[in-house]
Image 1 (cartoon, one colour):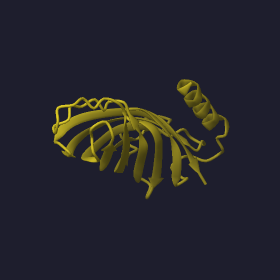
Image 2: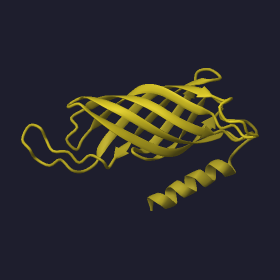
Image 3: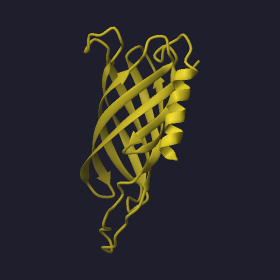
Length: 165
């Protein structure tokens, strides 16, 4: 059912596309699939910079509690916010494929995470089709968890967003 809904959402993005592009429209909302899975938003602040946000759930929440040794399997809620820089000159093509990188933070709750915080580094590539208000992206995100315990993780996601006027 989830795959059907995602397919329908992405198809509707392409069918409702108007003669504009994602970068010229400042705010986009869509989905991200991976780690985490949920909603993705992007707010352009200039021609090369943007904030991105994610709110979703993560299934990778299997942890052993450091307090009582109990298993805390299950899902967790994930929120992140990053500041991104885009390089539009990195790939020469008739289409626009900016590489982007950035830094941000995340908060996880549930499945033994107890509102853990982390610093994130973001590396990705986006496709900004000409004359359409969408972007499609794939990213890899190494993070350093600062609380409730320290650790290193790598998340990854694939997503699409529709940009509103």
